[in-house]
Length: 97
Length: 97
Image (cartoon, rainbow over all chains, first blue to last red):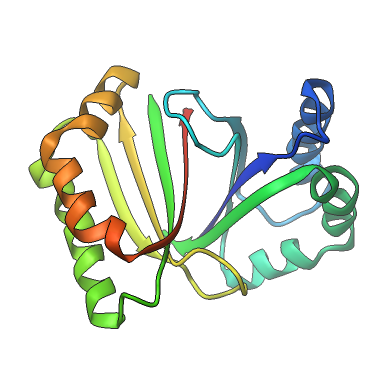
């Protein structure tokens, strides 16, 4: 199984309301883009200074299913509309579990 | 439960052998520093350009157990010796699961 983990840090262009709408759009992704076995979007717990602000964790049965998700046009549209314009930093890893 | 997720990108100061020793040192942490319920260190799967290179995922029963781990002197020593000198970038999130 492939676990896809993304850390997002939002820019000042996104106020609290805009960030909430972006998080909601990310949470709708598994309804719109098939292939994931589990899908979580969560806020950082605020325990440590300097952390990213939002984490997305999604499980896929294999690399091919992840690639289909990553390149799905609906996914790319959500990123272009709700994520990229409000991003200060992004860090991603996919790993075998 | 608190899940602690760190992405590491290693600098050119660390060749493959040095990176392997750093990963081994991270994997020894749960034997040396108490408190985690689960502890994984894994390489990025190499599916996407621009990813971080190593992920660490550790579960703690609560924020207090995470804080004890994070501030444990043995943990800080491992970071100072094996991680910080070879780090190009680091991104972390803790979140409630």
